[in-house]
Length: 219
Ligand code: IMP
Image 1 (cartoon, protein in one colour):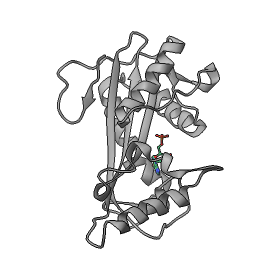
Image 2 (cartoon, helix red, strand yellow):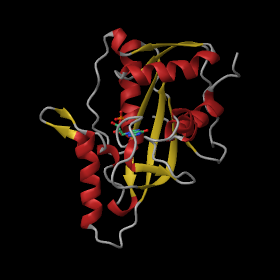
Image 3 (cartoon, protein in one colour):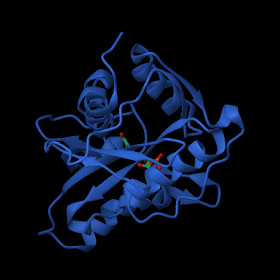
Image 4 (spheres, helix red, strand yellow):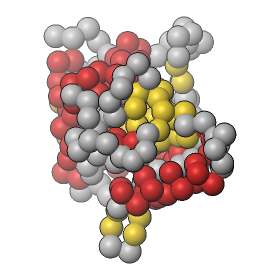
């Protein structure tokens, strides 16, 4: 297994370049598939979704974002014989030792589906339980993992730092957007122009790192 996590340091081993061609996006989320497909199209990369190939979603048994992104990418690469790209993301609150972290989506689970209002309330309750001195700093993390059919993996982590606001503000976006105010802004992710969010988000940061490391020059 080869994992390259990059930040600003040059990698010890050169990154494997992603050649133009077909790539599976290991996600059943149509929005994610469209968004990632649009980002890769200028590089001559044609994307297909795992769902369209009949590939199911594996259980996310990892205890880190990278482990979950990697297992999803590996699962689709193994079953399709194509390079696969997966992402895993979540919210980490400093005063909660990084929770909800890889369990970010689980905090929203109810017997009748996901409830993001409830999830945000749980985070706020956990913070309140820490007492008035608890800081409200938090960050979103996104790891993008590429897996080749021969098992080679490259992973890239993106982050956006901010603080949690209460009560939730704004109606744009999804998940925990209404309680997250990125540093340098006075609006929550759910109040900001989506173009602004998409330029500063954890996903944008991870994608910039991936593009710089493995993509050919845009056509
Ligand atoms: P997953 O990566 O699809 O498993 O998503 C993890 C969870 O993190 C999502 O269901 C969202 O609740 C949360 N999340 C990830 N990115 C964002 C974001 O940009 N805004 C708000 N919530 C997010």
